[in-house]
Length: 282
Image (tube, rainbow, N blue to C red; front, side, top):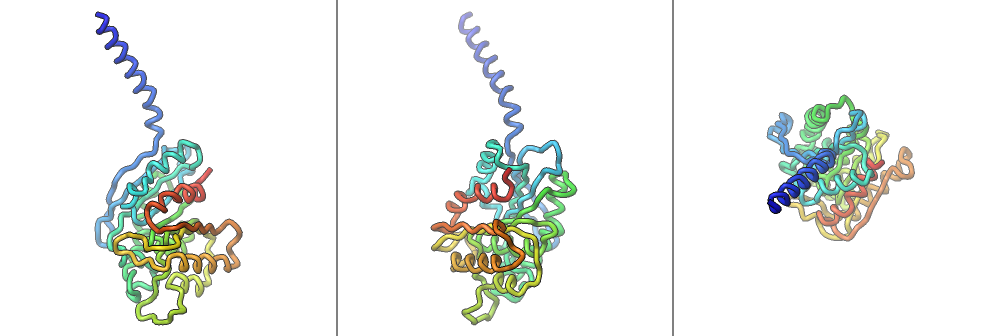
């Protein structure tokens, strides 16, 4: 009889504990996998979506699009997002990670498509973001307009992120490039003084987009991502950051440049919380 009472008491206490935890579980950050067919890329695009709990007002939801969404688990991004949210240091946020297809073809500078050593389908990827992914994100989040939108990427994905942000400042307000492949040059370009396609695009552009920029670059090594072409990462990133600083439309605080030792997922995981707070912090 005594054992039955103990078992009953234990069952009741466990039920109470579970019921108490349910509200907290509902308030946690969620991660799910999805898929979107792209007519621009002519393939099914895998997506990893991380979202904080729905706010009372959907107009408060922000959006982060990340190239190389297949790295999310390696970067422990759900845990990072959940930790910042529980500490009340992160605004309501949806993160859409786009799993890469052919990184060398789809990540690049849109205007140079078909002319570069890599990035031949960068214009297709730009169209995918603008015409398919962005509407998908709005529909999934149940919003007519996000409070703010940022885009980020790693290696060649960082090059793509900056290019897309520059092309669509009507939608995007912030760009993050982790070890960006800014050293990429045009095909048959032998002029060693050239600083890369992205540098030349920014230098010659007359646009004045109201963007903010966050850069990370390690001092040595490549990104370690298969089919990436990020070289001279530190020097190339510094050149792009300095060029943007020289533009008269940027102000103090518009550009963050964080330096590190390496260009790999371990380094990116360490600095990603700072990027999220910079982009979407309370």
